[in-house]
Image 1 (cartoon, rainbow, N blue to C red):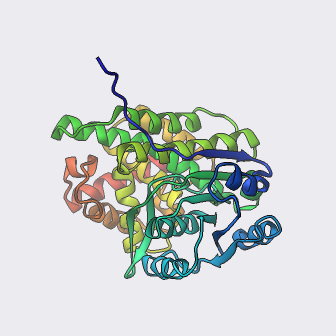
Image 2 (cartoon, one colour):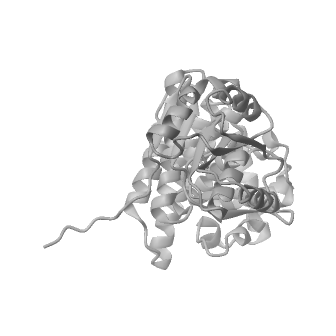
Length: 352
């Protein structure tokens, strides 16, 4: 009787540590991605260009291209430009927006992509999803996962503390997303992928169980690995389901109604805590609340500049952002008045 197994796509290489970027040229050559260094290097506006300048001596055949906006239109323009030359791969250097553009561009031109992360703000580092704007609205687009991932902790430490800690909020929101997936299974018969769930849960519990902080190198290494593991959970599931539930519906609604309110990870953390409140899951609520407090992440709408009324509006809009996804928000199907009551109760609890 033959043994059957599922093939799981993963990066060829993951290098997390201090000075990790110094090994990029060796990685490209030894893995067969680009032995001659003929790569298109897409860089962000902050640390990306600085890193690219450092790498020029090692990657003399590379062309450095600046990413100006995280939009589908800009990514398509970059893809047209890349098709004018013959590249072995696309290398994205920067934060989440730059990496999302690089993943999307690489998918358009059918080239392997290497992700070089300079902060740990969310789980898009190695995910099969790119979050980009299109005609003024942010959306999620399927892409190929990176063939290699580098996280240089020297550069991560130089990013604003809030942007590093935000990754904690995104990872722990996996717990809320998984609860929503189980809810969909119980109420609608949706199939839950056990392998994807295991990856997503392991990532969240690795973060939520620690007592150290982002000042610790060990914690940063674990956070980077947890974010990559979340990305792999999505690759296994074939969607963002294991890492995105009602928490991310609220996040996307805030982005639509009040653009620029806060970063992805902060919003994911608040969304996850609020959804745990809606489920009346006291154990999960306490775990997420404790973790957000520990890392100085926002828990109440006012901490990210939203009024109670604005947060109510976001929760009301949230289910429309992912019409095919069933979460605690769809299950409760709350009226505006019921949402207002829940938000008032929630804000009272987190303000104590």
